[in-house]
Length: 512
Ligand code: ADP
Image (cartoon, rainbow, N blue to C red):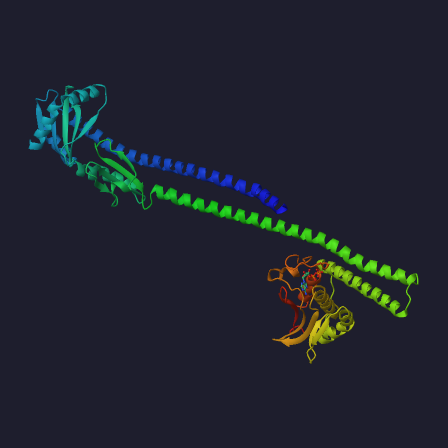
């Protein structure tokens, strides 16, 4: 119930903000990518604009040049026009005519192409009047037309004037490719440098007319019309990587970061949950400990009191019975002392204040000494003993009181947790550079899942074979503490129903 509450609280504290945060990051990611794309597009537009502007400047220079030629009197027209055509090699022919299209001058000479240009202009006189009108308003506007189907040549039309301010219609026949390579490419190369791919496309036949590196029209996503070249497109993109790839890679990088962050937060929440759960378990075990210890204290105390009172009132008839009562009082006092010793020792160890008196001792001796004291008492309770003590001395470097305490705890447990088969085996011996002491019983045993936990402070097995035996949950924790202090270890082999075997292992290297 409490755990459910913790889970719900953690969910609220951690998961909800996490979800909101992730959702917010996602939306702002998209927003960021959109902004990046916009900025990128604006930059590309500026670059395209400057290429277009350059083309425009070039055409304005033509208009100015031609008007210079036409308005300069005294110079032969052929010569200066020839010079103009030589300077702009991509202009194949130039036709100058009056607005009624009767007075024609064709340079360098009349060809079927120049004738077809004139025919076309004659067919669409409205364009002439539009250009003349614009010119009168002060715009030096130039118009461009696709001259043939292939788009290989273009016709430029603009209005200039003679020295007498008479408007003159000028038509230029221009080679598209030569125009691009002579006029646009130098500018494009200047802008592109190493960073951009810039290309000129003719979308009518899906053809790349020029590109700073091989590309098709589909590979470049920002394309604009070239003002001067009708139907042609100027495209630009970043070299090597497209803005979409760039945005995508940024997006996935950010996504990964968010996911990693989410995972760390979840991990943190999990750790917090585990800690809270552990603390709660500890709190529960502590409160069990208090009630268990109270019970452990009360039982011997009431026995002692009862027998002491009976003896005091002289109600005991036979000497044998008296002796029996004294013995019970003695045993219960022993039990109380043992319990209090455990608790005091435990608090000393928790406070790191436990002092050991290490010395060379014979493990067999410690075992024999304690068995002398406890064996009879256990046998009276119906236990049979099997002692397999090693024949040689088992010298260890240890605090014999502390080891005795561990041994007594193990014996006490073996007795407490055996119900039907009351048999205890005590074994000592040597193995692989260690000496060991084993206490085995044929009692209720311990499930595998509890093998680690039984050594934790206050922990008592409550699942599986239920036991009504009271205890403090400190005996094995103490045993582990003491064995750690001896650089040794305590091992457990047990299965429910078949009994338990605890082995204290002492290293030999400590002996000096
Ligand atoms: P306690 O005072 O409860 O005996 P211990 O620390 O000595 O505390 O033991 C911890 C738990 O390990 C016990 O509550 C019991 O469930 C289990 N245990 C210890 N020794 C044995 C044993 N010989 N047989 C079965 N269970 C045991």
